[in-house]
Image (cartoon, rainbow over all chains, first blue to last red):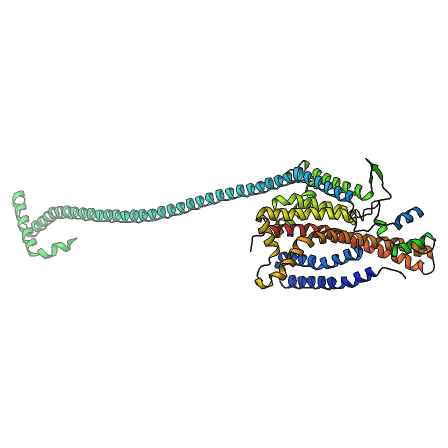
Length: 67
Length: 184
Length: 268
C-alpha cells in the first residue's frame, strides 16, 4: 500500500466542508418544506452558502496538490 | 504503453498553469460570447418582444371585441326596456280607451234606451189621444143611439146631437176627473 | 509519490496502474501541430464546444418567427432558462439584460464541455484541464469587479465588498481583511477550482472503475465477480456524472450572476 500523505490530509480536511454543506442543504430543504413559496429566495442563499463552504474543500484540494 | 509510462513519470501538476490553454480558453470563449451577443441575443429579444406584443395585441383586440359586445348588449337591453315600457304604455292606453269606449257605449245605450222609452211614451200618448178622440166620437154615436132608443125622441138634428153629447161628456169628465189617468 | 511507484510496478509488468494526474496530461501526445504549437485533445474539444453552442443557437434563431418551430422552441427554452432563472432572478430585472449573452454563452459553453466527459468517442471533460477553468474564472473576476468599479468607483466598490453591513466598527479590523480576502481573492480561485476538481475527480473515478474492472477480470479468480461489479458501478457513476456536469455548469453561471448582482448592489 502506498500513497501520499497529502491526500489523507485532504480527506480529513474535506470532512468539515462536507458536514457544512449537508447542514446548509438540510436547512434549505426544511425551509422549503415549511414555506414552499420562498424557494426562489432560499435557493440563491443556499447556493451561496454552499459555495462558501465548498471553498474550504477547494482550497484544501489545491493545497493537497501544491504542497 | 511503455512510452506513455515513461512520459507519465514526469507528470505535470494537474493544477499547473498552461499558458496556451489559458489563452485558448479565453479567446474561444471570447469569440463565442461575441457571436452570441451579436447574432443570438438580439434575435431572441426581438422575437420575444414581438411575441409579447402579438399576445398583448390579441388580448387588446379581444378586449375591444368584448367591449363592443358589451355595448351592443347594453343597447339591446335598453331597447328591450323601451319596448317593454312602450308595451305597458300601449296596454294602459288600450285599457283606458276600452274603458272609455265601454262608458261611451253605455251612455249611448242609455240614451238610446231612454230615447226609445220616450218615443214609446209619446206614441202611447198619441195613441191614447187618438183612442180618446175616436172613443169620444164613438161614445157620442153610441150614446146618442142608445139615448134615442131609450127616450124615443128624435134626435136627428146633428147640431143638437153634438151639443147634447158634448155637454154630457163634459159633465162626465168633470165627474170622473181623477179616473181619466187610469184609463190607459 | 503514488504515480512513480505505480508506474514502476506497471513497467515491470505486474499489478494495476491506478489512474492519476497523468491521465489528464496530453502534452506529450498532441493530435497535430499548428504553427509549431502542439494542439492537444482538450484544445480541440474547447473549440468544438464553442462551435456546437453557437451552431445550435444560430440554427435555432436563424429564421426566428413568432410561432416557433421545434428547433427554435428548444433554443428559446434553453436561452430563456438562463435568461430568466439565472439572469433575471439573480441580477434583477433592472439591469440583467446586458449580462444575458455572457451568462448564456458561459452556461452552454461549460455544459457542452462538461458533457464531453460522457459523450462516446470524446469522453474527456475539457475543464479537467485547470488552466482552461482558470481562464473562465479570471474572466468572470474581471467582469464582476469591472462592473462594480464602473458603478461605484474603486473606493466605493472596495467599501461595498469589504465592509460588512450591520456590524459594529469595532469588528472592522478583523472582518474587513476577511471580507476582502473572501470576496475579491478567493472567489475566482474557488470558481475555477470547483469546476476543475469536480470534472477531474469525476473523470478519475470513471477511469478507475472501468480500467479497474478490466484489470480484475483479466486477473481472474474473485475478479470475475468484482470486475463486472466495478463496471456496473462505473455505469452508475456515469449517471451521477451527468448530474454533476449539469450542476457545475449551473453553479458556475449562477455564482457569476450572484457576484455581478453583488457588485451592482446599492450601497448599504
